[in-house]
Length: 79
Image (tube, rainbow, N blue to C red; front, top):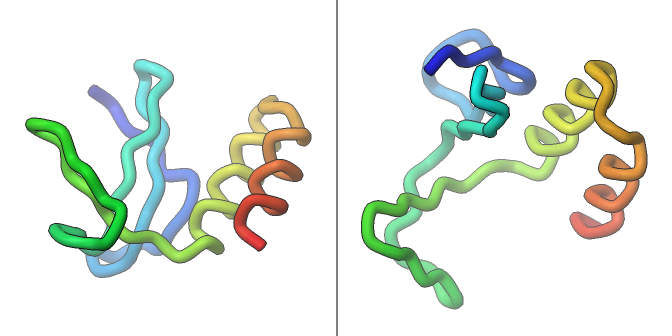
């Protein structure tokens, strides 16, 4: 799998969002093992990201051709 960074910093210590050559998203963030309301399936991992990282990633995807409606819905959801 080949990844392209769409949001985050250049070092290895901060949350980052990548898009893969398979059309999927890969996220890097602080590992969450236990939180109220979190139910993980076998083989799943949860990571915590600041909303700004997600918004920046979606904005970068819009610049690449994703619908602007996606950004607006996400902004409303994260309020």
